[in-house]
Length: 416
Ligand SMILES: Cc1cc2nc3c(=O)[nH]c(=O)nc-3n(C[C@H](O)[C@H](O)[C@H](O)COP(=O)(O)OP(=O)(O)OC[C@H]3O[C@@H](n4cnc5c(N)ncnc54)[C@H](O)[C@@H]3O)c2cc1C
Image (cartoon, rainbow, N blue to C red; front, side, top):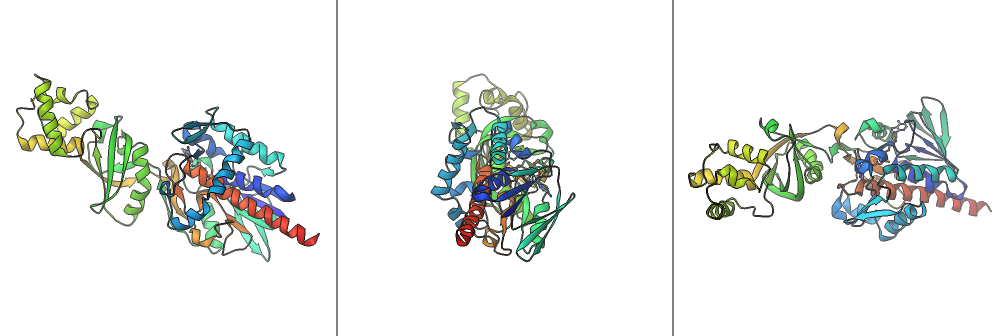
C-alpha cells in the first residue's frame, strides 16, 4: 500500500514509522531541508518530550471527552516503550521527560534514523501544494512532482512558529477536503497588557500567583515565575493561561489577570497591610521602599512606590490607611488588563484546528474522506507547557500509523 505522510515533524515522523510496518511503501514529503526542525527548538533545545502526568486537565479541546478516549493507558505505555526502543533514556524532573543527553537532537535524529531503517523514503525541500481525491486514491500535487497514494497522513502542523515550517497551510487543504476548522489562535504565548508603564518593569522576574478573570468571573489560576516585559507579561504561568485568554479576546470578552507578587504570604490586601504593620514594628527605622526590600525585586519596589504615588523616603507609619491599601493592592492583587497576545510566530502552539468529532478517534482517520488521516497540531488539541503538545503529536501519529499498518495486514490476510 502506498502511504504519503505530508509533513515530517513530530507527528509525521511518528506516523511514518508506524505505518511502515507490514510492508507499506511510505514516503514523507517535507518542505524543509530536514525533518523535525521544530523538535530542535522544543524545551529550550532540550526537548521536553513527555509528561508522567497525562491527566486531561493539561489538555484543551472543544471535545475533551473524545480526547480522554484517545489518551488511554495502553497508548501511553506504547509511546514510552517506543522511545525506550529507540534508545532514548529519559531524564525525569517533576514528571517532565527530557532525553538524558539534554539535547533535542537526540529525539529528532533517532526518529529520522528509525524511519530510514524501516525503509521510509524521506523527500525534503518539497512543498505540498494540493491534494485531490481520485476514487480510492489521493493525488498529492507538489512544487516538484505528483504522488499517488492509497492513504495520506496530514501532519503539516499549525500556524505557530512558522520559521520551523508549519504555517497553517494544512488547515486550508483540509477545508478543501470538506473539514470544518475551529479558528486557530495563538497559545503558549506572551501577552500584551493595557497601560503605559511596561518599560519600567521590563526584565523583572518574580514568583507569583496569577488568577484569570473573564468578564469579571474567575476562570483559572497558575503559580510560577512571571516575566514582566516591555509590552506586558510572560513566563510559563502566564503562557499556561494564554490560550484561554486568546479565545476570550476573540469573543470580545474582557480578560484581566490578578497578580499576587507575594504568593507565599497572602492574597488579601488588608492582611498584607497588617503584615507590613508588624514588619514595621520589627524592622525599625526603614522607609517603605526599604521595608519592601528583601521581599520583592528592587525595580518592582520602585515601580509599586511610584504607582501608589508614595514619596521615595516616606515611612510606613506616615502613610494613611487609604495609601497603605493602595500599595497593598498593587503588591498582592495587581490588576492587569490584557489587550492581545503576541503573534502566531512567537506562539509555541495553536489552539483550535480540525474538530475531533470529524475523525475516528481510534485511528485518526477522517470521517469526511476515507484514507485520509489527520495528526498532531492540525487537530483541535493543545496542551499545557510540560511536554503535552509533543505527547499528543506522538500519540496521534502512532495511532494513525498503526491503523494504516493494521489495514494493510488485514488486506494481505484476505488475499492470502
Ligand atoms: C519554541 C517552541 C518550544 C516548544 N517546546 C515544546 C516542549 O518542550 N514540549 C512539547 O511538548 N511541545 C513543545 N512545543 C510544541 C511542539 O513542538 C509542537 O506541538 C509539535 O512539534 C507539533 O507537531 P506536528 O507534527 O503537529 O507539527 P510540526 O512539528 O510543526 O511539523 C509540521 C511539519 O510539516 C511541514 N510542512 C508544513 N507545511 C508543509 C507543506 N506545504 N509541504 C511540506 N511540508 C510541510 C513543516 O515544515 C513541519 O516540518 C514547542 C513549540 C515551540 C515553537
